[in-house]
Length: 269
Ligand code: NAD
Image (cartoon, rainbow, N blue to C red):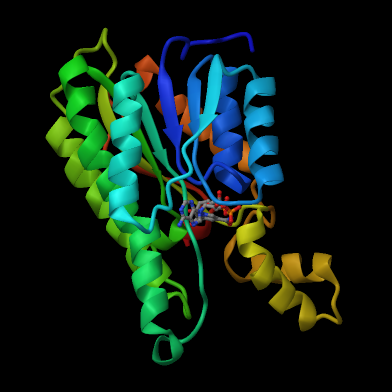
C-alpha cells in the first residue's frame, strides 16, 4: 500500500476471478489502480474476487463478465470500458488447458484454446493499443507460459497458443515502441512466462502424478517439478503478480517486446 504509483490509472485484467489473474488484480489495486475484473465463476467466486481487489486497495473495482471465446463480447466489453474512460493497462491472463496427444486432441478443444489463450489477447490489444499510443502511456502484459518458449508433450493447442502470444506481443511492442516519452512512460507490450504456479489450472496434472504415487498430492507436486523446474519450487500467484507490477512502472518504459521467464530455471536447460 505504500507505493500507489498507479493511482488514477485503469487496468483490465482478464481471467482475474481465479489464480494468477486474481493475484495480479490485487497487486494492481494495491498500487492504486481502478481494476476491471473479468472471468468466469459462480456469483460467490466473483463477489469474493471483487472484495479481495477492493480490500487490497483498489480505487474502484468492477466486473466485466465477457466470455473471451466470443470476439463480439470482447468488443462490447472494450466499448463499455472506453465509455467509462481510458484503459491504461491490459493484462491478458485468461487461459485454459487441455492435455492429450495430438491424435486424440478434439478439434473443438483446439478452437477453444486458441480463441481464449490467443485470439482474445489480439482483440483486447487491437482495441486498447491505439488509445494508449495516442495518450503516450500504456502497458500490455500477456501471461504466456514457459510453453511460449519451449514445448512439452500432450499440449498442442496450449503450446501453439502461447508461442503465438509471444510472437503477437513482439509485433505489438515494435509497433508501439516510439509512442510517448521517457517521462510519460511510453507504451510497452511484454509477456510473462511462468513455469509451474500453484493454481486450479494445474490441479488435474498434479492429480495425475499423485495417482502414480498412491494419491499423495505432495509426491505428485514433487514429481511434476522434478520433470522440468530445477528450483523444485512452484511459484505463488503473487510472485507472478510482482513481475507484472514492475512492468507497469514508468521506469520500465524501455522494457518492451520481452518474454520474461519466471520458471525456476526451466527454460535455461
Ligand atoms: P485459473 O484456472 O486459476 O484461472 C483462469 C482464469 O481464466 C479464470 O479467471 C477463468 O474464469 C478465466 N477464463 C477461462 N475461460 C474464460 C473465458 N472463456 N472467458 C473469460 N475468462 C475465462 O488458471 P491460472 O493458473 O491462474 O492461469 C492464468 C494464466 O496463467 C493462463 O493464461 C495460464 O495459461 C497461465 N499460466 C499458468 C501456469 C500455472 O502453472 N498455473 C503456468 C504458466 C502459465
